Image (tube, rainbow over the protein chains, first blue to last red):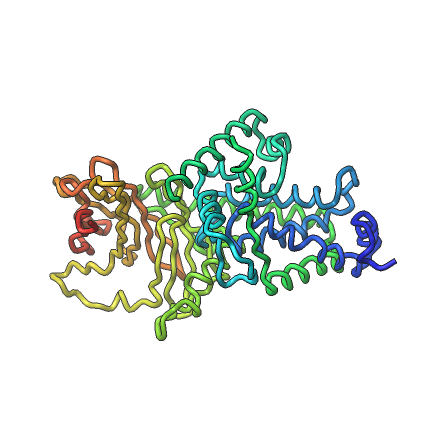
Amino acid sequence: MAKSECTDEELVRGVLAGSRDAASHLFERHWEQAWRVAYSITGMRATADDIAQESLVQAFASLASFEGKSLFSTWLRRIIINRSLNVLRSPLFLPLEMPCHEDQSSTSDTYRSDEATRMVEAVRELPFDRRVVVVLRHWIGLSPAEIAELVDVPEGTVNSRLARGVEQLRLELEVSA
Amino acid sequence: MSRTFDVQIESAAPLELPSQDATHRARRAVLDSIAYPSRPMSRKRGVVVGALAGLCAAVAITLPAVALGTHWWRSTTNFKHATPAPSVVRKQFGELYGSAQAPPGMDPRVLPLATRKAGAFDVNGSQNVLWVAPTSTDGYCWVFTALGGGCHANREILDRGSAQGGLRPWLVDVSTRVTRHGNEPARVTSLSGVVSDARAVSLTVSYANGQTTSVPFVWVTAPIEAGFFALGIPESHQLPVSRPTHLSLYDSQGALLAETSDLPSPSAFG
């Protein structure tokens, strides 16, 4: 069977058996999504590069502890989100890199409408607590219960931060329209 | 909240992709970690490394405490024992001050891999970490997390003689941060910068209403050999009538080493 047809779980078993080929396929399958999750949370390319790389190294190094209770992609995403939040909260973190929403020098050639651009700007400017829940809910697709567990607050707090964050976005976009 | 607006947020999700360079580096790091798994440290080696780490921590903690005991306004960070910057900071330091960003002939030749944490300053309730890195030409670059920074690419600043009535204002390099909300008058909210005289043990800020207060600063040892300060200005001194006017640097005998020219009034910023 070609590696591209293997499930993640089969590739994980291959990596654990010492297959560099399986590791390479697993990396190719998840790298872009991993990077995008880190970038969505941090808004900074160089920071996302570091977080995604270190998360994948950590995930591959601890594959033996991956029990298969969830999908590999879910497990990896959790590692990346935790690392991203830890980096942003760290007193050592130096946000010298300006958050960017429309990186002209990036490899992306996608066109974004003015509306989407304003939305990204508004999300980036939300206070940290609200920004995190809005990004995790609307850009990464987590449920309030999953977010509550990741950021270690009650689900009700997640819902209220989410409601306030979305309301703030709506008001700011009305004003800037 | 309307479902339409939720969809609007979701459709703005970032579409950027990682660069080829980042992808290549990550692939290599991941595959290398598989090919050469790290071995658990032996118990004996672990004890030695642990003891050394403890010793280093003790040195790092003790030096500022001793210095503080002598001159409470000046603390000392031993650069060689200071915490190395994480990779994201080193990278950003390189991008900020690296050759690619410098105008022709003005490359400070910073050594970003040597960046270290030299201190932390509370400025108006938020912590500002000070990062410093040497340059290859006997100078240094610095950044305060939220206040910015700069470079003294070499030590030419020390050789300017004693012009301007002996006040040598260049030995205190100060940046003023001014903020303005709506139609309110501009306010000076912080001062940050560098002192370049090793004899300095006291730095003071004087205000337009005649008051003077001490400014704590951290002296960073070789190869940096400079002092750094970041000061939040209290509300009572943010407006022009009582604004900071100048900084003065003194030695241990109380002799004036340097004094800045008049700092700009916040009203000069519009």
